[in-house]
Length: 333
Length: 95
Image (cartoon, rainbow over all chains, first blue to last red; front, side, top):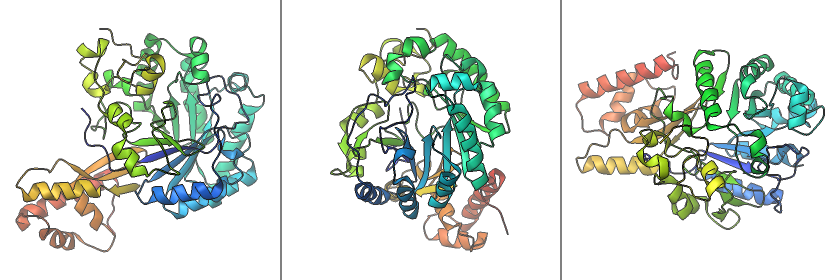
């Protein structure tokens, strides 16, 4: 069972736009469409969310740099006390934009880099020259003193070379590299057979990655995947177990709709009309996600108490059922 | 370092303490340090809120004596242990 859920989200993942200048093969949001909120509407939502002392806002996407008001919104959010970050493909992160990122108050900027080989990254991101631009962007941000993180979606193109990705991130001056697990949502579902790993491959990847993380002192390596609970005990008890979406974080879409996470397309409210706390405390969907029931192979699994069935988004994407075992899970019955 | 007091949890803990129940393991302050989240219990959370750079250990103990039904010696020992832990983790420093 989970411990007590915090009084409000710790992180709001905010999709300011679904528009993107890339067409990545794994993207969860390319199939999404929504009318975008205007600057004033977003500021109003920020103001109301700030009342609940949510400490972090992270812009995802769509590509945040396509919003003309990105830095204005960030300056406003920062003035309200939010710690603002974003995930970007960085193609548009010029020297001037890097300075704006610094001046508007971005605490960190995360750049997506999925391979150390430019041709592999460019093919995955479907944009020639994107690796080069990402590397240049990292340099621009570094020169401005903006803290940098690197995000890599682990999949068939890179699971064997993740140590090279770690070294590349260190070279770029990143303080963290996030090794994101592959999600079967949007194009991630369409291209799953080509890009996703088998459960056995996930196990081997995580065993190696945890070993590297333990020994690596030059950078923080983040792997937020509850199924690792079966092979690794965290030194401290986590605040919540299983998936963190709906327990520590929520997702806002471009039109203000709220979903438990970016990979679970179930709308549980809209912040133009609904109060964040009412959604957080009263959503039946969140209640279900926070109180999952084991089924199938999870029923007899000794790790269930720690992983709570693994990633709820993956289970839901494959079966339509929050309670189904995580399809990446390698543990046998 | 980012932190937030969980006010609802804090109220519930104090109510439980008034009923004579042990709620010392309940988290009342969330701390996020280097991407890791930590939880402080009621005593740790109340100490944490007092760490504003102006108080010494004696002043912290004096402030907390009115909040907790405990003798000074026990409280002083708990405060000392907690501050040592924070210092060991690099979360506070003495000037």
